[in-house]
Figure 1: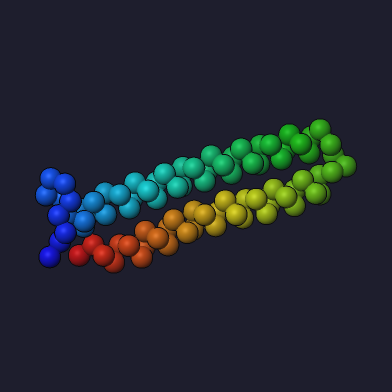
Figure 2 (figure 1 turned 60 degrees about the horizontal axis):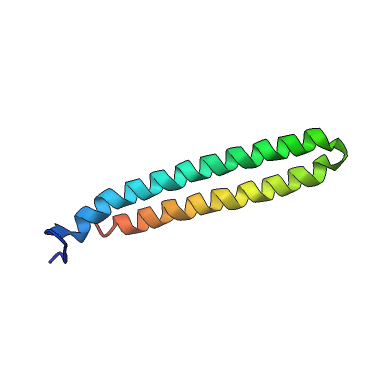
Length: 85
């Protein structure tokens, strides 16, 4: 009893292709964002060594939020995988 989408593709087929693709996009975006955040923080610490503690704290908090978004994407994939039989 699969709902038909467009040209006869069931929602299970769409999920089978979309879930890994979405997770790959989330992982790539997370890696890019983490790289830019750490790079910017290192540059800022090199310019202002006296503020390195505050910069590092902000960087770690930002990196945690970026990683949390990737984990949410992974959890979404794992939950929706149960709909593919």
